[in-house]
Length: 166
Image 1 (cartoon, rainbow, N blue to C red):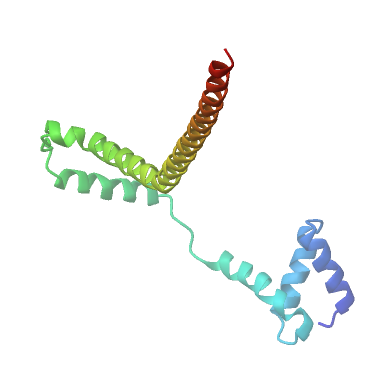
Image 2 (cartoon, one colour):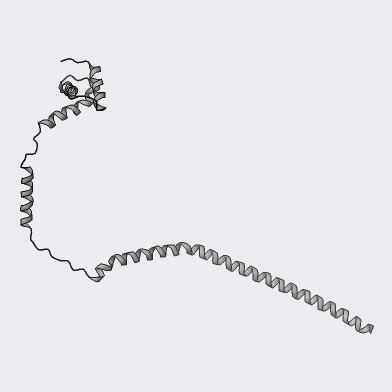
């Protein structure tokens, strides 16, 4: 059975586009079942040979469902009927809340620790600004004192002259 390989390639293209008929798919299966398949078409061989093997496999019987259900019922019959209740204490109920509170505490501690360097630097800047302002106030006070002292000396110089002139 020799076939034109171009025809097979066209059939493959149509097969992958879902445009082949059942007869054309049978032609592809028969072609790939042969021993002398060209090397360039060998990757497609398993696709069509697996389909023929799958048809030959044994299918599930009509009594499959009843067999499975009987096995399940047997397992249920073996299990004890009573279920032991678990005691749940208050501390066991509150464990999720404890975990949540611990998570919140960790997040707050990390946030506080992250802000500390900035707060320290900010506090240091405020102290430096306060020192600068204090120094400026002292300088201004000293200048006022010097200015008042100069005014007082000038007044003393003026007053004695005026006293002599009278």
